[in-house]
Length: 325
Image 1 (cartoon, helix red, strand yellow):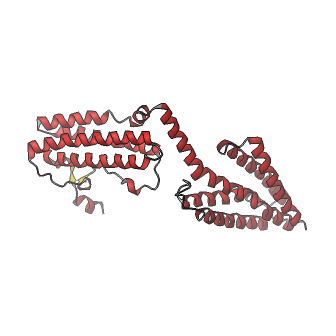
Image 2 (cartoon, rainbow, N blue to C red):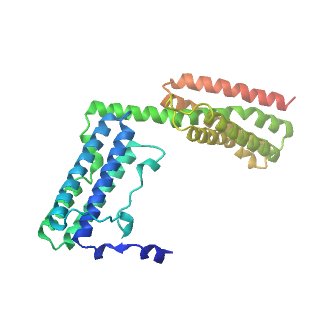
Image 3 (tube, one colour):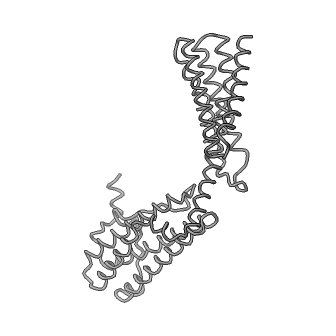
């Protein structure tokens, strides 16, 4: 298979100045489009960073103009179609439209990688060129692109502190809406709602294995139910809560985890030890829920702990009463 793929590609070492310039023109054009795509994706929530990416796209356009002028002066108006995939080992770019989410830090890291790759390309091309003017242009572009390798810091430096703080707050709110909230809802539901069936089965059967099966079934069932309920609640377009299936996945997984946490101790054959450990796990789960609510939902820790503990104790008591009935 690799031999077949390589048969349709030409080694970079076999390209002449004409092919290298044509390839560089396409590279600058595509990189400029990617930066504009970044800017378009960020404009509503991160206008300052979008402006920086717009400026970078303009810079790529200027590089393309210089390359075009040099190409026309040396080889005429016709530029051959040389695609990136036609050259073995050449730079590959994943299209922005294929990305499901647009994380600003990931975009900054990708931009820095793009600039470093472009600098390496120009450096290698300049070393091979036999034309003084072409060699000088490629060397200059290599220096320019190399100066952008630390792009993450450049993007931060080019943005006003207030705007940067606002963008970070926007990112935090988005993380809370799309990840923390559905995850917290799921964890609360899984940890609390499965207490009653688990401990009812425990005290009714006094059997670790049977209790484990009941707890596992309750946890998985609650996770599936909660996941679908969250995914179908809204499409996230108006609320800004993100892709519904992502929320559903997060909520469903955390629901199942919340129930399985205090179910796992019943893998221990000794019923008394298993039940004691399960109660300890429940206490840790309730503390974790209270901490997350205090950390991300601006709820005072004591109030959050009181609300969660009271609810958990009521459900726990219901399970014990029903199990001993």
